[in-house]
Image 1 (cartoon, each protein chain N blue to C red):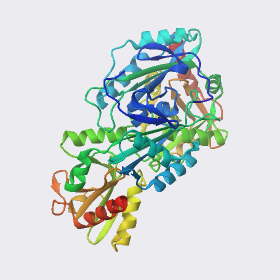
Image 2 (cartoon, chains in turn green, red; image 1 turned 180 degrees about the vertical axis):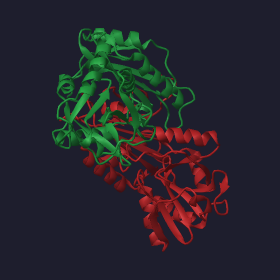
Image 3 (cartoon, rainbow over the protein chains, first blue to last red; image 1 turned 180 degrees about the horizontal axis):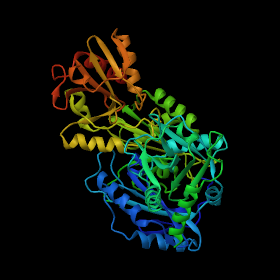
Image 4 (cartoon, rainbow over the protein chains, first blue to last red; image 1 turned 30 degrees about the vertical axis):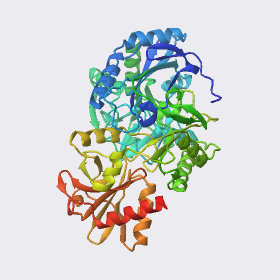
Length: 285
Length: 285
């Protein structure tokens, strides 16, 4: 079907399957309707970072949406998969996809559904590790992520794909979603800004409650930083002392340019560095 | 994997495949990222209704998003499938799903992608035919469809699923999306209201440019109706003379109750009936 090489293994319904043979029904509601949830986790030399809050979010969203939760040991599953793919000594990612399973046509979920669960994994792109050290340039996009059910981590990435492509076309690492006059974050990351003596976590409709965002807020409070959660105007970014992004794959990435304009000194700032040290230190233990 | 019975055949990459054996890779970008487009068409005794505008929308969206368009004869494909499934004398639906195909992990599309195309079909639910005759009750939802890339018919139906479930729980046919103080439409249909002597097509961010909506507007103009395209406040609906929904499966369905409140006479109104006659007449030829 495709020229893309798929290597290694995935877990499909808890069973190890070669990646190039892992298939789901075209009637899977994940494929038909985006009726699915995902979680993406970082695995640091075999250790799963922040598994509990990821599973807590998955569980809460599945309950809210009525997607049945399979009985399974995610930690064991992810561990087996990482081992099987030879990633036990690497910095890796794992993605959980949980769909409502196969259903007949129609939006209303079937009364009895067997959820589909897939776990895939891979090595973290070295470009992300570099981004973490050096900082990145971003652009502001002319559109938002969409606020509908934005509190759930669902696999509707079309706005993110378009945003990433626009950023790449302008030589930037990522694009920032703007909706209703507020910055929602980057295409797959939450956004923070240091304004004056305060660390502000961008918030508002369509902002995903990121696991790393919550960990960064906790760490910032432990460090005695003054912390706020507010809507951030797009213009605030270029006058901020620091801007940075958080997600579970790269943890904390400094933003050094917004639309070509230097943020602060144009280099990763001290607040960002302190949070990186704590979050990455936490993960290394 | 599931207890759901899948009968008949689908077309996968243009080949007839038994429905219960039709599978796609878990790395298909449709499954991973919702990186896909869909079209749903009505087939009246073998005749595909409004194929051209459906394909025009699919083509325009695929070009805008950079999804490669496969070389294929959709009309022939749909015809073969309808025939094979024994639906050539029925009122049926066909759904086209076009994804960007299999890709490695990462939002940026692969430079060379082989799109995945699936066509499925089935008999139109007799409940829809009944709805068309009798009219339906709807409720107003407390949320919207999401406006991000809402001009494309992408398969992100999570808000629609939640809305349909809420409507069903209240004994209603469908729920109306409300965003930024305006009615966007029902979960899978556009909305019209007759206010005074004018037919208003609800418009605004997140409103899909429906094929049947466009056909209804053309028909209304041909009938000499005064036509407007405007944002509709949720409160307008209960004072409207008529309200109705359009989509490609049921064409035109009268709304006779909104949140339990009668619309107009509480029965399908004359403007709606005239448009039904034209649109269904058109389709019967």
